[in-house]
Amino acid sequence: MAHPPKSLQGTLWSSDVNQLDLDKHRAYIIHQILTFGTMDELKWLFGTYPKREIVDTFVHQPMKMYPNHIYWFTKNHLLSLQHTQLDEQNYVTSLFGPTRPRAAAGV
Image (cartoon, rainbow, N blue to C red; front, side):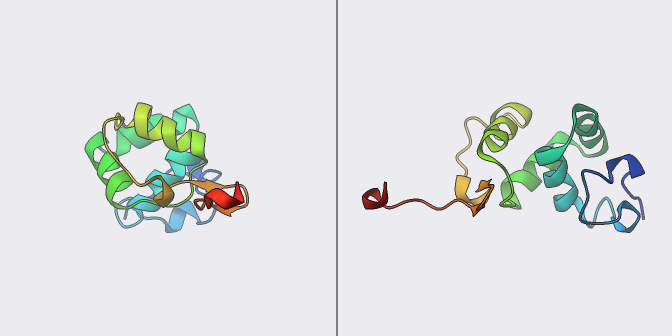
C-alpha cells in the first residue's frame, strides 16, 4: 500500500498519512490538495495522479468543501473545465457550512 508523503500531513489533516492509501483514498487526497494545497503539493498531486484521473474524480465524486473562489479557480484554471457545466452546490461551502440558494423574498 502506497501512502502520501509525510510532508502532506498538514493538508491531509483529518487522517494519518500513514493510514491513507493512494488508490483507496484517492478522492479525499485529491479534493483536500485541490482545496488546501500549496503549489508544491499541487505539483505532487499532478505528478502522482494523471490529470484525467484528477478531473474524473473532481467531476464524478464531488465533495462539498470548496470556498467559492477556490472552486472556480480549480474548475476553470487548474482542471480546464471552464466549458463544463457542474452543479456548484455539490462543491461550494461557506465558512458557516454548505451554501444554499436563497429565496428572492429573503434577499
